[in-house]
Image (cartoon, rainbow, N blue to C red; front, side, top):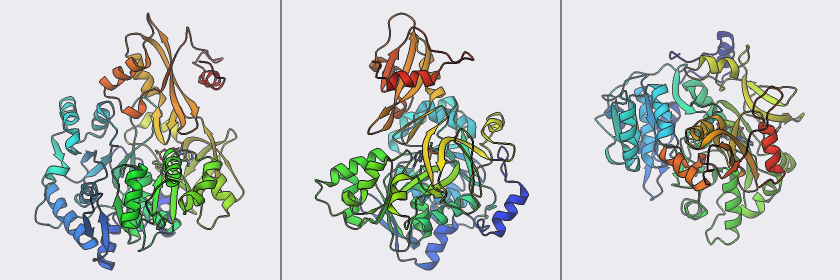
Length: 512
Ligand code: J2J
């Protein structure tokens, strides 16, 4: 495995191979299978209606791979920040064929996220679209190792297809970003073996087949939309992938009608928005069979309204880019679908629930360590290789999990993850901020919003001014606090640390 990654121990690897979870194929195989089985079926549809059959997509990927092979080498890392456009798909598969390792950034990320990401991964190239040109200039200046910027909607390089060496299926295929809890980004290595299993098995659990038309409504770079089953799972099943530029009801409903979309995945606030909008929408949504909801907890009340509002089945998905995926099953009783976040995807997923409710897990598609993060890994994994998710759950005898909270220092703002420490560090850089503690506050639509408690020097800054300061530092928009509370001093725990429990309690108590 790539230096800086933690491999599975041999006896477990042996078991995962013997039990058929790891097939020893490259991740790209799921596209090749489609080309072999049904070259003329439509594989990919852009928001503008442009479309590619499996054969056409494969030919495009082959030309791009060939074009890229003179720019990047096997095992070199490249940061990819490309929204939901067809080039994302062509680039992703082309990088797999070249053996260069995509680090999948989110479209919302800015300088404060991308620069550390390029540094940590020692990225040699940064793939963007036109809108990120200014950001790319900043990134290249800050990280000289980034020797190449490729604007994919303008100049995705292509060349006559050439033979490329096959990657080792037990090695890293791509890096996902962790939601994070600390001040620095964490990279999740995903191998060909584990991610291929992830996509194929998820496709089965979601009932995907050749007639599936999957709408990519969330960013394609996110694990949920990429591989749970996401676009990779839809390809694996021989279906059609339709790209939406955003998840708004206007955009999504029009595409659902036009392409007769059968399934998609959204976060809870988007599900709420869709259910409200569906009441008045003119579009025909009757093709929709399955709505997956995950990324944050969907409450039972809206969960129970999905079928009636949108005319489709609900599948709750409790996943993590680190690995473990839980799904409610299509044949689960409605009670479980509405009130639980599903059960593990794989029979070999091992789930341990500690006394305080913390969920630990290991399995054939759950990481054994973050990339180049030895110290952090010592805290995030048990001796025997279980990943400490930081989520607090209850497990039913059926295996289904109910997410009840978390012990990790992270805010989950409608599915978007904000590492508290990272935001606190940015706030501490403000001249008027003496101390900062970031806490989630309950919100009906978003699940949580972000409150920054501050101890200040001099005149307390206004929310708008703090937001402007953070934007200036290049912090992604979704990480900006929704509210600021100035305190004389922070409440402390018995051991003298800032008591976030007490701060959260004060918020719940309605302190203004
Ligand atoms: C409560 N909390 C949830 C849920 C994730 C599929 C779906 C989601 C993600 C994802 C993903 C939750 N109820 N249904 O990668 O492939 C919180 C937990 C979890 C964290 C992981 C996928 N679904 N969560 O959200 O890496 O706290 O992955 O540990 O972004 O989101 O975040 P992330």
